[in-house]
Length: 434
Image 1 (cartoon, rainbow, N blue to C red):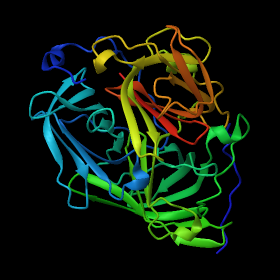
Image 2 (cartoon, helix red, strand yellow):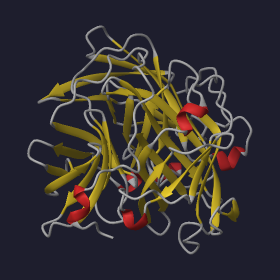
Image 3 (tube, helix red, strand yellow):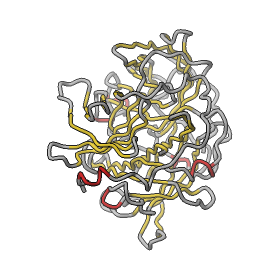
């Protein structure tokens, strides 16, 4: 079956003591950037409620075969998370919250056993354990809502995929029937790591490829919805095709999750991953100004992966709330992972130029982090430097995508960024505005 091709329009280049829980999150608190924006084609986020459930997957999803469910219950101050299939019992416990969006998962001894940053009713980023636990990204979709027009989503592939021609980030369009029960996806294209195209227009990944469009069905039950499809994936210069069961979870506020199962693809095609997920955002209706994006307060996680050795590192980080130099946003890790303290200035995001055909997309971005793990995570950096405090830094090329959504009636930014070192190891930064 010949692959249907469409014109390329994507012009790219320590545990916290319980006493800490009573402190205010003043170091990273902040307000939205004014009145809310109208999200093109989407109904907008629902009113906030006390109990919110999300579907997603850990960042090492190439080895995961099940979606994960994450529930935060503020009425009872409890949490639950774990795979939705396979018989593994959910992990449960109590929570404490700071500044409403930062959630501390407590163990039986009353000390931290995980961290999360939530946009209630839209999405959550969860670290289910200590710093060695892979990051989980999950989205809430309550119903089968209708989309107006053909809406574009930008996404990063979750960490864990390696190889010079493997997919790294991409775009996809979605439209629906008037009642939201039938969906149509089109023009899905994956692109290789920015380390591979080195500042030029990005190249599409060799495989998998996708048809020009494919249909999907939305099903909702018990206050949760998923959109399911079975498109074909193309391999071997489009000569071979295999069905790939796919699930989408898309929040009415513009957060995007996609999961694809490749269990039908034989190893002879050179594709070694049974499962791949994508984390993304809706394209903003207008180009964004870096001055507004980079000076806003953010809280989130930096997730570093070394899939060859099956090791990961996930650290709580804070960004913004500081003057910027050009297109550089500064931030870093928190001392002892205590977000009531000012974050260290040991990291930066350099956005560089916004793609003129894709609002909110920065395909020539760079991510600078501490060079503090050369034997595991920072031994193959594109370049090295020295931080403001005199410590060694690691810089890699990356792709950043920014969404302007809504929370409590105000504009709120979300940033998803992935960078790759010279060995193909991936760093992913997910930030929610505070």
